[in-house]
Length: 328
Image (cartoon, rainbow, N blue to C red):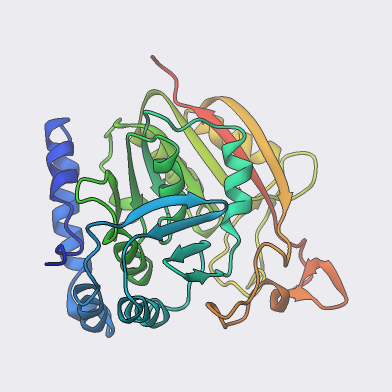
């Protein structure tokens, strides 16, 4: 019998035993609100899809090069059912994945960002929070690199369902969850995690300092924030505030220089701030595929000059910074 999807009782027990009763209450209440049929017109269909998946008790989730891969015993009918389920959950934006013999070439080649992270960080034995995690690709990579547990937050229900499809093929006690929450659902002072990641979230926040403070409060003293965000490539304390859209996105509020971002981190209570990587986002890393058929980065750049967005702003450049919550 397939396991019940969206079941986080093991996580709630773990948090309760760690003295995180406030967050347990928040997760119960807000997950229940998010996981209602009326929250998304596709939800009932998605739930049925998850419940119809073939048994996954002998499946193994592993790294296969850049892929997070599901291997195990499945006949041709079962493989076809999985493939149909994967297509029903398009678009796939973060990845890549492989489910038996079906490879999902996602919009983002998230493996490239993972490489930039993994060469600078260690994950073994750590309790990790991934804010704005999407479908959990990075969480699986961190878990397979030895993380003690990974909790992802993402309010977009399709991504949570995509994660649940993959989790169906993992052991029931796998310490990896994606919750339909966001950063403002975090308790005010949890101090629970060894590492918190915020990747591709900060520029979507109209209150970036509030976001950083919430992230700081999620960490134990001495815990690390890994912040990945778009930056303005200039010296000095400057911020780009788009007039309307940035790369066709309406919800981009602030793109700071490294100097300004470092100041924001200091004002938010972080120390030992270090720039780990600066990389331009290219159409090789983010592009349209058969698993994500809508407009992608190439459609958001100036066709005559790919160093600019269609609005005339600097094209996306992303930085990864590490910062520490003081204490021991």
